[in-house]
Image 1 (cartoon, rainbow, N blue to C red):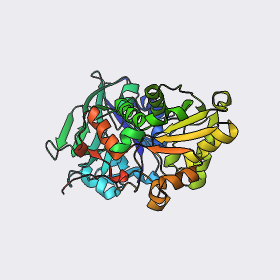
Image 2 (image 1 turned 180 degrees about the vertical axis):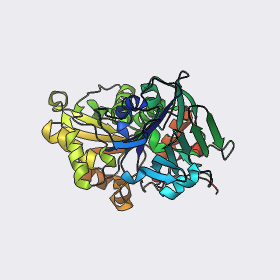
Image 3 (image 1 turned 90 degrees about the vertical axis):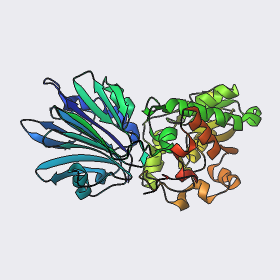
Amino acid sequence: MGVTGMIGVVSFHDGWNVGELLGYALPVLRHRGGDDVWIAVFNRVDGLITRQSNENNDAPGGEAGLLCLTTNTEARGMVRCGDVHVAYCLEGLVIRPLDVCRLINNEAGPLQYTSLIALTSNGELIAHRPIAGLRNLVLGAYGFDLAMISNESSAIGALGGEVRTFIRPGSTVKINRLNLTIRNYLGSSRGRLCALEFIYLSRPDSEIDGHSVYEFRRALARLLAKRLADRVGDIDAVVGMPETGIIYGLKVAEALKRPFEYALISIERRRSALRKDILDRLASVHLKLSPVVSAIRAKRILLVDDSLLTGLSIKEASQVLRHRAGASEVHVAVASPRIVRPCPYGVDMPPSNQLLANTFNDKSAQGVLEVDSLTWSTLEDLYVAASEVGIDRDGLCTYCFGGDGDGLDL
């Protein structure tokens, strides 16, 4: 299982170096937590080339390419499927290379919980969105020169492209220099959208099936502020947890009419919630928290974050605010509902017994986190925020919050 950033590009005309172009998408997809950066490029001289990559943009040249950033190296690879080699990148549940081939060769129906972008040794780009939906898959273009497919619409924009369509669940897209086809297995079926994509995983400048991630977060922050309305007198300033808590903190401060202080500075942007090893997570938290002492000292601080799993990040932040920066009180507000069970659909999470909300009541959790109060959004808040951006409650997967899962009868 893992969270993956992926984009594939095909050029329809000579003169484009797709390998170099993919490098510009790398920082846009980095937020999805990928330490493993892998690239595949096709050109008519060398065929299909794969290699590890980095920000130095050392990709080989070619007319079609695939960039994959993943938290799990099993989520990408190369496999021979009949007469062609296939480089592939997966998001969601990891499937066997044999199952990748079956999909590529039209020998199997749609996948249930796995998104895929693949590049073949004959220069064809293939993408598949699973029948459950859950995460995004977007088809875009740069004029009549380039076709692009990614799981983040903002990556399309970063390459100068425009989103043309959001690929439906259960659909497979195939693109080469001469043709583009979309096969939909389920007609009008739409699946469900992962609530965590809106709350945490996706970039705020992305859209998921046409729904704005930013507007969703703004709506959720406004609802969270309502839950804090009777605590305004306890707050001198609002601070957002770097980086994904900043938007929530800004909007909560705006609603509560309290100053927002950009007072926790990120040194290195690493998604600590996606780190698997506990020591690695602690190191990641330390690296991203540097306080602005003058903005915090002797103040009652409301710390706002997007979500809370084990509580390690919030606990460290509360200690930094109180002991290193001199805050007199630290109150915490969490934009997501309580996460009470791990995701079975491909998002890495700690086991149930390490989830704070599944282990402690709020009073005990306050003691563990060393905070003066703890406020959460509710599942109903989540549904209301979704409704404000055009998603009904049956269109949202809230399994990890104790709500409904994918809801498919298969």
